[in-house]
Image 1 (cartoon, helix red, strand yellow):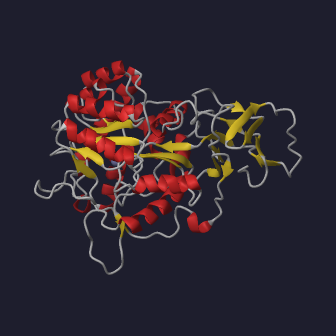
Image 2: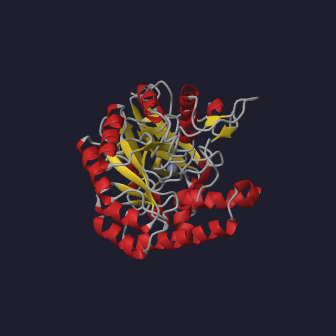
Image 3: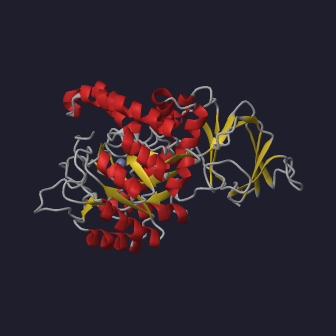
Length: 441
Ligand SMILES: [Zn+2]
């Protein structure tokens, strides 16, 4: 069922953007039965929109219909809420509270029109728990494709403590300093139900922390267990080797050269630039001042320029681009607000057309949630994650930002109740302590 009691949901009128990159068309009817799209265009025989007991009709006249947004880079389980009167701790030292908070934040994502997220790294197995709670219907939220803690070596991002401390259980990385240790960790995480293995090269790509042979070992083990593998990789060596080792996608790749991107293109490996994070760092840094951010803003401006050049290069090389924002990475990367920023950046900085950018955050991103060929495109037989917008994202891609123009969200064939005020993105703001240092880009 899933359509508020009615067996069939019919969206009538409006302009349909299919996510596959085709030109928008006038929508006659889009029919949803159960959790799938039954038909687009003609009304199938036996369905009577006038039968309000069996059919629920959404009038989309003057509106736009598109696939649910997918954010392929959102962290639900970083940090902690700040508790009044309590000193700030480091790391996620309260996993039980943090799991409840993660479930809360997942609902904010959904209400912003994000019907699926990929979580490339988290604390404990919180994201696996949130994924399963959503699947069971205990809480509302997007589809979740979850990694656990990142596989790190000495010097990787998320290896933040001295060697005699290592990576305690509450941290976001797991030290694995050999291929054997990495394979063991892949097996441990598989046992705990992850979908995705996240590897972690150096924070800024200046040194390569994981060898190609180690990446190959992880990919072989993960793929045998039907898990996907992604890597935080910014520099030349790790980006080239990630492509050659057969990783499923590369996150960032913003500080490597054209030669490495050509290798990535030849290998057919998608790239997730995560430009939203860099742009947000810049805008937030200008807002609060660089003393608060603790980063030289001219340095971030240079990073954004390099990012823009890379986006153009990705497009020229025909590399599949995935859209991820890094929401939840820090307290200033709030849930529900930034998920539509990446397609806007692709258009403004990268030379992408709005239709291309929409496909990046719908069709392309389906890969990052393990549902390629089943999600991210509006077509008969596909999963029914659908948005209705009151503004045209092809005329102005920025209308996707912040979920402000989303009037209807359908996830898995069910209409999400956007009027439940307690669950709107801007409600119940508690102070977040992301539990990470601001040293970021
Ligand atoms: Zn991230």
